[in-house]
Amino acid sequence: MFRHVPNIITAARLGLAFVFFGLLSWYQYEGRGSPTLLNVAFIVYAIALFSDFLDGYLARRWKVEGAFGRIVDPFVDKVLVLGSFIFFAGKNFVIPDFEMMTHAEHGAFVVKTITGVTPAMVVIILARELLVTAFRSMGESSGVAFGAQFAGKVKMVLQSVTILVILIYVNYFVGPGTDPEVLKVATWFRDVCVWVTVVVTVLSGLSYVRGAMKAAGGS
Image (cartoon, rainbow, N blue to C red; front, side, top):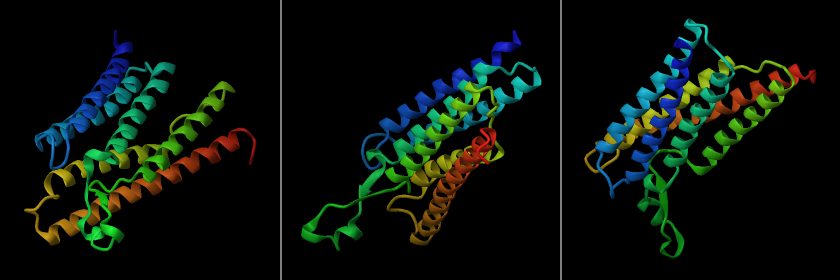
């Protein structure tokens, strides 16, 4: 009976991911959707994050860890995180950049993201995940254990915290009623979270590459 509970929780987290994406896809800053959507999205993501801890804890406590959970659990994590950053870099969180437009030639229309996440950052995060997945597949096909490293866990925590920070920032600090000094500090904090996440994501990927090379006898 207990054997399937962690896997059911993992599957439920995938369902929560699609609910979360649905909320982000409907929301549009200064357009379609209410700020309530981001409040609900925050709660949904927080529940999904807790479920990630819960399924792993129960699997270890009941000693029901298996190949299915080892493959599907990180897959769901990647879907949730990568999907979030893709939406944050998308059109629903883009607004006109009037300051840059004043300096642009021929009255060009310039936009900026209010999440601090750019498509280039998404590419970096995606490339890291694809690289680690490839090395993990190679290792496990050769009978070499390639479990999660501490750096990978730190990366996941930072990514999740950054996602929650962005939701709070967009919903409560961006807008005409926000004090400019408060907005400046909040934007600085958002940018620090985003860039630290990108850097740690790259460094954790490099640690997996070194581990894979050692396992293959490359160093």
